[in-house]
Length: 328
Image (cartoon, rainbow, N blue to C red; front, side, top):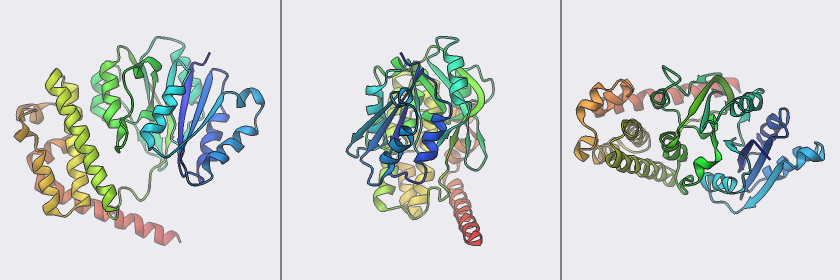
């Protein structure tokens, strides 16, 4: 019945949920199912979403599914959506973001024209920056791995892609843990070279004042993801898993440098240094063009890179805070 099911996890987004839902309503078509999952939100977000939908005619209201569950996190909320999705394709919309005005028109046009496993597209951030989901030749699988942007919301997937896969519960960066695997499983993918999704940036960024619990979960999440791709690469010798493995290593190291003291962060870096694991050869890291220069530099000069990275990041945080103060 439905061509596309849109999954919207909802948690603590009273400021943004109406704008999110309205962005769907302005372009909704009969082939669209929308699944809203209240992930135990302590605020009034879900009721606000329901109120927006009730303003529309009954036939549109019937395209919406509202599900309430106890708080389990983003991965579990999305997994609940997957269980209830009836569409031939699955899309994801975070409840503080919104669809670009021509999202549904473009997606339906493509998925009605061919049997694609994944349709990806660019997104535009709340600061006006376009993030390109493919880099170089947009027809190749390597172009996706070169770009290294794994947002689930920047693509739609054929529903059967999730027959054997789900988002990993209890971790951050669940998109990094799953999306590259789905690309390796896909037979046919296609790119729409337009920004079809509006992505809200947290202007506080990954602040330097996160809770100890959050800092530990961030590092443990990257360690889980890194170990996952090490195992996949060893089992398959697939160079695309090597790309994601190195990206995960980079994110682990830079995150540790922001969240812990230099001594503690370098312990984490050295613990996971890939040469010691003898997983990816030094020659591959230094010569493969798909790995970004910053990954090469971090791997070769970790202390120099992380010291500079942390210094620059702190200066950016100070700059953002100053801008906020001046606007008050």
